[in-house]
Image (tube, rainbow, N blue to C red; front, side, top):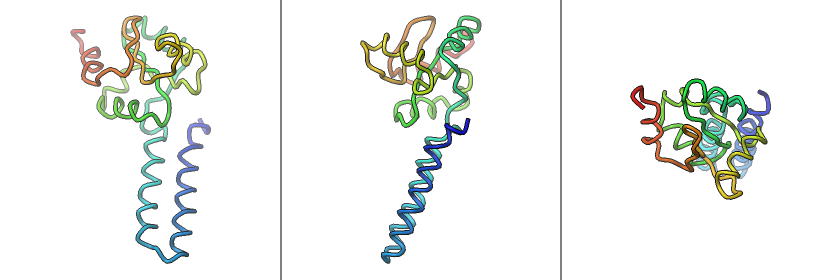
Length: 145
């Protein structure tokens, strides 16, 4: 779990270092902006934004049992963040696989996208969908789907 916090911690530390340099250089307005922007980036890239990731094999097993989609994602992906944010509370109803932490998940994504690691790739009923509309994913979560 500590590995998941390395990027956010580095972003905060870099922000503090840059802001300190700006303050020493006499540019306090820019330092304030940096002290707002870097922690914001850290929050977006933290484990707080995405539900806990599981392995691809476990996600596929769970999906076969409960019928919920599997989302293959990676930290820092703007489209993954868009999907997560637009799904809101429903995001916890999907199975999330971080392809940077799970080689099997990366292999599934490459197989679905002609060798590219294009995310988010959402697998619904065994069929991959690359960067689907969040509303479409939400419809797959409805009880009637």
